[in-house]
Length: 135
Length: 143
Image: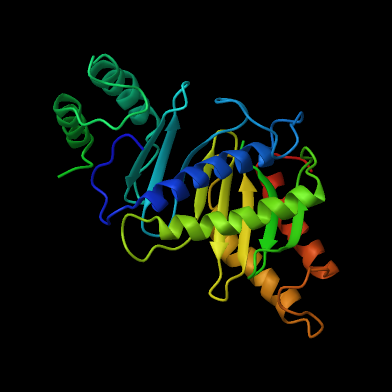
């Protein structure tokens, strides 16, 4: 977990581990259930990033979680109200135009370390506002 | 093309009670099915726990690249999983009404059925397949 904003509850280390496990098993489940791929690996075999079938979002009664995994394995997670539609393109934009531009190209950024860069947070907030997801 | 792929029923303790494909699908080994069903059961629990807002239910819909997985949790804890083509309309409704009604009529009302035991009701099977394949045919999908 490199950056977190706007959770209504305090998250602890344990929660992040739980979340990582959840995404990992969801991808394994999606790959195993994939109805379009007749040549499946054995379940539980190690998967490379981008292999198999990925999941884009899931929804419960009170929230919807959107998920994007970058080619380098960074995971972008966005939680919204359950009524929000697909956010894949928006997450892709956040990754390609905000994260890469304002974080990866920042010389102070060390890959894999938590970061807090004002320009990125500001741009993210602004973008979320233009989407109408933040008041 | 909207398609219903398969239905799984998971018991209150995460065991797979029933699974049925409505079209030809790549086969999944039975042991793998058991593992998938119980991990889905666990994931529903974890997703409710990780919710950013209080009082969340389990997962109702998961959207993957090539399929949608609708999940319906009954009040008594049984979980229905319906695998469909992405953006198949009314799948959640179908699960809540048609499938659940068939389950109640043919499985729960059978005096020999015990909760959380594997479902081996021929009538349930027949009616379910009939209804779901009729829906698939309406969308132009053969069995």
